[in-house]
Length: 385
Ligand SMILES: Cc1cc2nc3c(=O)[nH]c(=O)nc-3n(C[C@H](O)[C@H](O)[C@H](O)COP(=O)(O)OP(=O)(O)OC[C@H]3O[C@@H](n4cnc5c(N)ncnc54)[C@H](O)[C@@H]3O)c2cc1C
Image (cartoon, rainbow, N blue to C red; front, side, top):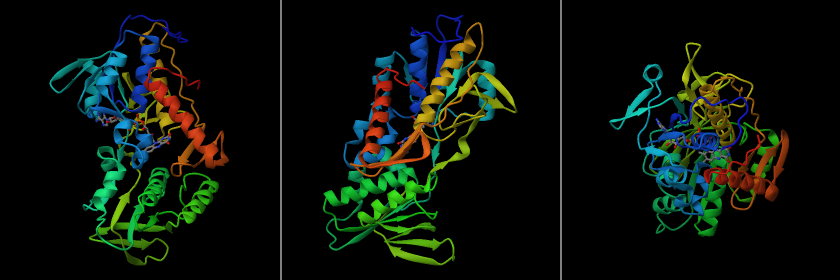
């Protein structure tokens, strides 16, 4: 059992429910067990697997199964219990759960000392026809079979494929698609449609310049400042933001990466306790993409913030259950961010946002970060901060 500052245990065993077994939930699970090895932990998650979602674009090269860890494996590894169901963290439910200290899912009553909500964020969606693919489809089937299944290979001649959304997720998929088409020798024209004037516009311009140069090398057409309205049969409807000019382009299929829906936020104080009408719910904490902490720490929807919040929420739950009740504020600042540009390179920043790193060094940083998360999944916490 590792030492945790300001934690003077009062209980030998706590009953903890974690709603959401993603990055924040797993980070919390490992942290609980590090400091309280016999904690009684239940993970409530509607999926049967933990999904290593930061690898999803790599399913153009590897099977989807490589990035799925069944919750049954985690049950064996960590001695926790998985209930396959969603939890609906609406205000009235939260109040009820705080009062009752139990909740009911799948007709199973789950008593808890603490509830930690780490249910992630919903992906933005549009109505879509059969030849449109979005992030949800990639969670069910690998990119290679989605593309193969939709592109009629018997059709001769060049076909156009549209990727919509030039944020971090859209760019990672765009490059994987470009390399996949080359490897498979599929004759096609790939284009990116993006609502802003440059790709990766949440980062400094160095990111965009580097990435757009690599797109040009791969002969990917770029439509900046362009709004996507939808796809009908083999055509997409677009509008130029500046002029309002509407136009159509031929497109055999579209991939949509429209970002995340920010509406599922739970607000928390600096210690991770859920706030309702400015009052903290003493026994309900939150972490990860579904949470917004009122503190100086980073609220970005990234795996690194999710892991840091998950670990902090777990430490604070343990401290809250102890005699001192001295909690630690969330102060984590992002240390960097790397976006992969296909199998062999990446672009990212390290330490300072203006410090842009490209090529193989950036890819190596990404691989180290992913390896660190794999160790956490194995129960080995190597995160120093
Ligand atoms: C393709 C892709 C690539 C990415 N690459 C990177 C990257 O390189 N670096 C980086 O820092 N970030 C990256 N991100 C962002 C990162 O994956 C997220 O910020 C991170 O996964 C958030 O962790 P989380 O635990 O909050 O949510 P998630 O990891 O999404 O986990 C949420 C869990 O909650 C479960 N759940 C959902 N609804 C409910 C409910 N109602 N009740 C119970 N459980 C529920 C889900 O099934 C899921 O298991 C990427 C995201 C995507 C989509």
